[in-house]
Length: 269
Image (cartoon, rainbow, N blue to C red):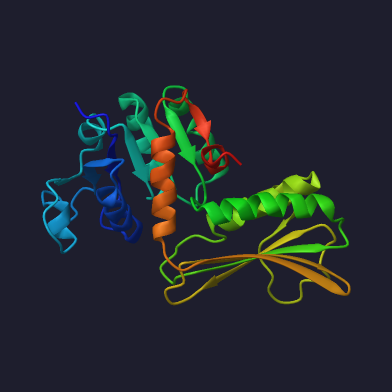
């Protein structure tokens, strides 16, 4: 029995799924022990390395997550909210660390993770990169230092395949700004402007989403007051940063007490 944690990747055929598979197989700190795809997918039953167009990896793509999780110490999951909830229950049953990078989850869906977190470690974050999580902390500090004379706008850009908006990262930044100001984001969020909208409401936190091309991820937090602006920015040029962060979270979670954690915990911020 090896002491190196076994990792299962869900959503194997997706962009992040394939990047996660490569990151785990390239690592000397983890083993790829399973990959999951939805029922009926044409990768089912194939070696995942061959399905990705490369050499065999000795891991067959399956649509049976419970069987795969039973062999693993961690599951890394960048899929869809409904699938993530199903995986959370099964990962808890197998006592696997469940790393969740899925975005677009509602408050109700996030709350539904609570039963699973009583039995297993869940690490959930809208963004797994070190730089973004530092940006979140900086946003909170700057928002706390400035009053409502400074309007806050969160501007994010992603590739044209992304299906949710604002991005999970943008919402993390908005939450950080709201926390810094001592307010609830749902009370001050302004996510849509079209037509005659009237003047900007003092204290609101605005969101803007750009979708185009192959943008990996760009996030600006703008603090604008009469006569001056402060811009905090993070640009991602390679989604490998998210895969490396997710693997770091999976390794960090080994031996931790059951509960819900985030990348601030993982990175010790």
